[in-house]
Image (cartoon, rainbow, N blue to C red; front, top):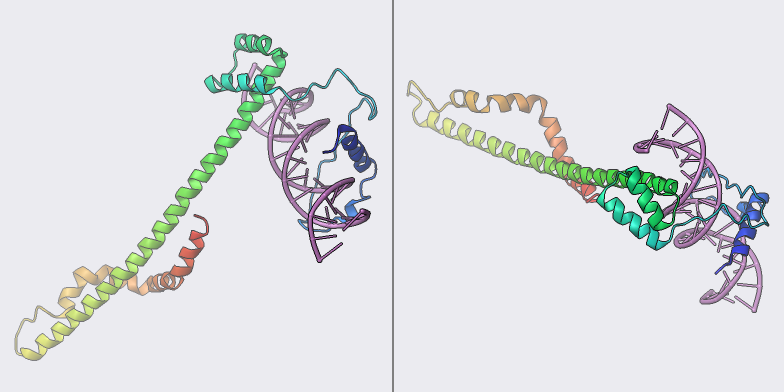
Length: 209
DNA sequence: CCAAATCACCTTTTACATCA
DNA sequence: ATGATGTAAAAGGTGATTTG
């Protein structure tokens, strides 16, 4: 791949002549505020030997990770011990732990969010299921109502001289259908709307599972 | 000292452009 | 036309600094 000199060269060109190539790159994503990169203060060509030393070795990181696994907090005694063990400045160890804690917390939050989202999605699915169940039950009630009506009419026809026809719809309906009667006035549209949208709603939800 | 935000730099990936 | 190569920009990762 590219060597360091080439990369520095590229970086320098893009820094000194922003826009030389950018015009060729078409829109695509749209809107991209980007932090411009500043080069080393010690001048581009030079080596600026000392103050660099980025990137810890994998051995160092492994040991740090092990310690972080045991305990996220870092008492100064452990910090100093770790630092000498790793050949690092205690300050570096402290910074590493700070960054690690912050990034661990972020990760944790993301996991928590995705768990909650899954739970929410499941609740939405369950809600749809219950709504369709309500529709089904409502239909059963209507059928039962019709049946009662039918039986009442038949009974009326057979014994019209009977003084007390306890099978009249009015006599049976109030205690049982009363609250549904109220519901059917105001909420019918909602339920039917739910029925009409039911399949679409479910499919939409499934996209997120 | 800590958490949170941000910076600075490095590496990798992506999207094009150019060339053989 | 097509695969290889070069390049800028974007995205991702991480050590370090600043701020409250």
